Structure formats: structure tokens, C-alpha cells
Figure 1 (tube, rainbow, N blue to C red):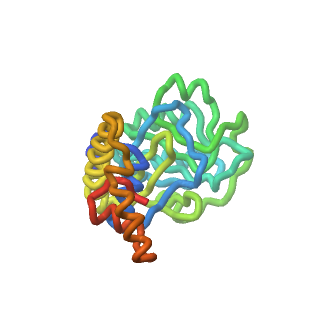
Figure 2 (tube, rainbow, N blue to C red):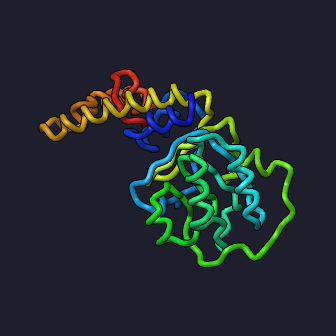
Length: 235
């Protein structure tokens, strides 16, 4: 599945749906640590990960863009640092000019007003006026792997990002994940319409039946109940 196909398929979905789809398919859930936000609300990005580790100099970003393909998402590992911003308006403009679909930073950005005006999807953990004042030794895997929280991602991964955060998943499973997410989305929309029409969610999910069976079978879970009746909510 190409980055362009990922982007189009994700356009009407969300990271909560992708996360639920991973659970449904028993694919390990890999989330960005809480707190990731888009610089401009309502932004979305999806594509193959273009990983890069930052060591204090912008040249590594330019190399990453040379190696990336159109539609990829630049995933920047700055170690979650809050004492500096590792990307600003020039880096974002160059990323957009390279044809990438977004930027996801494990760290901070700067030039917030300019980034909002540019409108390119940028996700980070906050802003700082200071750029890096260090120049660390560069690792051999600077362009092949990016840490993000407790995990590491690379070119074999896809990333999905929106206002709720980011989900990483194996690129080879992306199509199945998005298909499951679309199915969950359709079921949830139908359930929402029925609630608006006066039929409670408890009624739709036969919640009293679940409680009765749980009294008889203490190990009976709501997840199992929903799987048996085809409910959309993943818990």
C-alpha cells in the first residue's frame, strides 16, 4: 500500500478507529506517548514512516528528505526533549516541497505562527523559541530508525496522526487495518444514528443480556459479548 493510498484511505477515518482496528486484528498497539498535538487543529497525516534522528544539525533532515518518497511522513526523533525546538518554518517548508504528507516530532517545534500559516500537518509535544545549541555525535542508524517514546519505528512502518495523537503500525498490515477501521466507523455511525433516533446504546448492545450472563459466568467479558453480537465498540 503506497503512502498516497494510505493518505486517501485515512482521510475519512481517525486514530481512535485505527487503534480499535489494531485491537480487533490482534496487532500490537503502538501509540505515540500522550500529549502529541497538531500545530494546526484538524490536521491529519498518514503514510509510510520516513525516520530521522536529530543530533543538533539540520543536515540530517535534508538527507532524510533525499531518501524519502512522496507521501511519506517525516518522523523525527529528538528524544522527547523540551529544552529546544528541532524543527521550524524552513524545515517544514522544505518537507512540504519534497512532497511529504506530514511531520511527526518526538520533541518540540518553533515558529508556531508561521507553521499555522503554512498549513502543513505538523505534530509535536509543544513549542520553544530556542533551536538546538548542541551538536552531538551522529549514530549509524540516524536515517533508518526513529525512537518515539518507548518504541522504535522505521521504513517498514506506517503512521497515522490527527488531533487525538498518532498510531504506528506495520506497513504490510496497513490495508487490513484501514479496512477494519472503515467497518468499525460504519457500525459506530449506524449506532449513533439509532441513539439519536431514541434507541439507547444499552439496548443496541443488549446490555442486560450481558449482565445476566456475567452473573452466571463471571469470566464473561463485554469484549466477548460485543464480538458475539457484532457490536462496534472495542473495549
